[in-house]
Image (cartoon, rainbow over the protein chains, first blue to last red):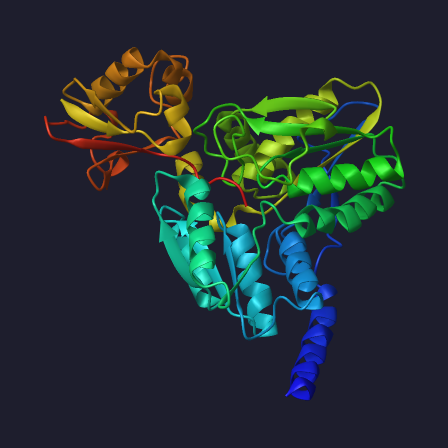
Amino acid sequence: MSLVKNNTDIALLERINTLERFIGNTPLFPLQQVFQKEGVKLYAKLEWQQLGGSVKARPAFNIIKQAVQSGVLDTGKKLLDASSGNTGIAYATIGAALGIPVTIVIPENASEERKLILKSLGAELVYTSRFDATDGSQAKAKELFAEAPDEYYYADQYANDANWQAHYHSTANEVLQQTQGEITHFVTGLGTTGTFVGTTRGLKDLNPSIQSVALHPETALHGLEGWKHLGTAQVPNIYDATLADKNLTVTTGDGYDLIRLTANTEGLLLSPSSAANLAGAIEVAKELDHGVVVTMFPDNAEKYGEVLRQIIN
Amino acid sequence: MSKVIIPTPLRKFTAQTATVETSGATVAEAVQDLTDQYPDLRKHLLDDTGKVRSFIRIFVGDEDILALNREETVVENDTVISIVPAIAGG
């Protein structure tokens, strides 16, 4: 029996190694039209160009990899987590490829596009009230896990160190190499906060003079899907507020305006959170005489038909 | 009096009250009354001109007001108005 299990685990680990080639290593795009200033360069990582179509491939893959390696997850358990969409899609993508069943707890008002993608990838969906946002989904996921701990591996992306460590070990190195070590500022918005925490820690370990700027939605209710307003939402356990050299707020309007402009001038059709990251990065870049500013584009506009219709009309 | 259901993220500004009774014949008037009762909500719901921010989703019963008469949608005494937060974080 243990021999069969070992063989299964080895096959699963080999499959994980194969998949790893399709995680991260995203291109760094020079933004030369939406912002121009002598002595200042602005770049963004096109994070949709990896397995699962968003930045969440990195944490989802690392969470699964570490869980399998430590023996708490295999094809006989369901991976369970709360998600606003992208991490769920990344789990479902990787889970499908590895034969690991995935259960995602998601607010009922998630877009139909997201629900369809998740269902197509074979994920089981559990819906929570539209009034409770992802905090309600987290509470439900904890409840499901408490009821059936043998059935599930509860990934808990908001408290799992493998989330930020994914960026510490991949995004930070990529950004430093792709800018030939010239990056001076890293700017990104906060959701689970894994991208900000992991990339900032990684970059500062490599070069302590790099400045890191955290972006927040201006108001509790906003249209920047994926961002959390930490003043009114449950603050993720992995968040470390001391890492930010500066905090800026971005309005939904700032982001939406840039979706249209960036599509027309750079040929990039951005999601609201990518456009909001760009708005924050431009604010940082405007203040500099010399510098190299890098931000993240977590995903493109493919899953945001509703927002696009609102902006284009 | 219509009832406005306050989403969890905004209850910090309503002393944790989940449902607020409001006066007004339309959604716009009900929201105005809501922000008069709880002025800290104003910044989160209304833009500089006093209109409901364009990206905020409001439902009357199960219907999105975008599919009705938007802010001018008529509300009755027993109408339930819901403010729905964005899908946030991860």
